[in-house]
Length: 249
Image 1 (cartoon, rainbow, N blue to C red):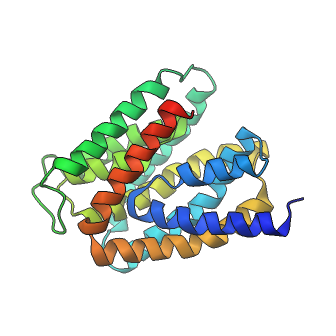
Image 2 (cartoon, one colour):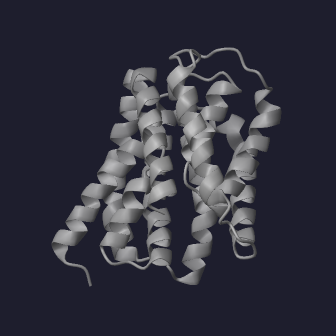
């Protein structure tokens, strides 16, 4: 059993992580260390993190959708692709050594940070798409979903980068589409953990309550301030995540 004060602290962590994740992704960078520090074994921490974070991600996705920033119908094929990719990634995770990703992923995340720092295309209005949305978004959803199932860190940053750089979406709409696909890929991975009995449900429930508030506030902030908030937060989260993966694995 957990002390009530530990649970309350984890609930507060859920609020902060939900806010960050709704705007820029990377909430797991906050929640997973907190869960491990609270005494959960690594696998249980990962499983519990998926269970609580999916609530905040769903709240953020719902808020973006309700405000008209994303069309769920247009994303149905991509949601199916993200689910399939994440499910397959979780299966492959049991069969292969993913240690090479511990170096490759931080480098890719730093590239994301540099793009969001230097590119003039991060705006509050849609730009010109370089690829056809209906054809190529499902392809990227499958690939990034597969990565989410097999490793995970930086998934939100990769989705946002694709939507901005390749499909011309504004910063807020890119975040909105990212949250919808994040929900799908997280659900696929979570199904494995639930079946294995790895989720610490009391902790997940408390943090999920915080995620509801944080996810809502984050989505509202992203909608209201757009690129002015999303751009710097993606850069900060990406750099912090890269440093953590490189020096504090």
